[in-house]
Length: 305
Image 1 (tube, rainbow, N blue to C red):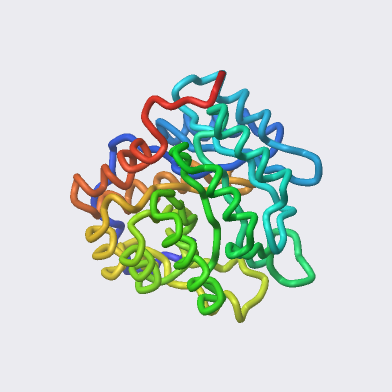
Image 2 (image 1 turned 90 degrees about the vertical axis):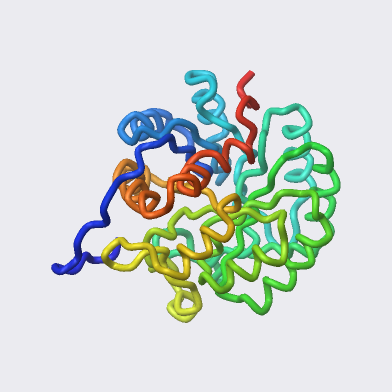
């Protein structure tokens, strides 16, 4: 979180309406942390998926939570960390099976372009990369046709010239598929505006945009990321406020709580977002906070059996 200057006055107001966390993820054994976070923050609903890594998956924990609190959780296909160059056949089959059976209401985050983070694993290439132009992604999207299952395609803007043309082509080839762009790719308001103007089938989560991103282990890549939504005083940056008001139905409140350190800060992150949302007029604030996610995931669609 940016340091607050002594002369900063806290933003006036606090959004007190309902919140739908449009993106969160967990490892196995984190059920209590999730429930405690919801209770402490007052978040009403959550789109949640498991982290499938090193033969340990949080998928069972997600299913357990959905059964324990019916109507609260929308379940996504688990996130895999082993996809490189193209999506594997077993991964595609697992997603399509879960989507067709209604076990999964959305496809959890696919790491297409994910730079190494200082607090995460370090790779030989400095990134996890799967090419969205490869046949596997097309096979997956062909299989998702007519299922109304949004797909979280994670790509960060540190190599904009490489990745934006590929995603522009992908979004255009599948205009009926809804793509969720996590964290706005850590992009600038100008970059996000370009994506939204070009493709009506892309929606953006605002997770981790409440602060400047300093997590990339490669400083040169970090320098290519965009600015935070708010200044160091917590006030919405004019360019971002204008963009949200231009596309109030395309932005989603989300936290992307995932590892322990972010779940431990969950209530504080949510409180910060209540201050940010209060800086918007009531109608777009409600849209970003809750209504857009309700529409995206379906207000009555449940993954628990």
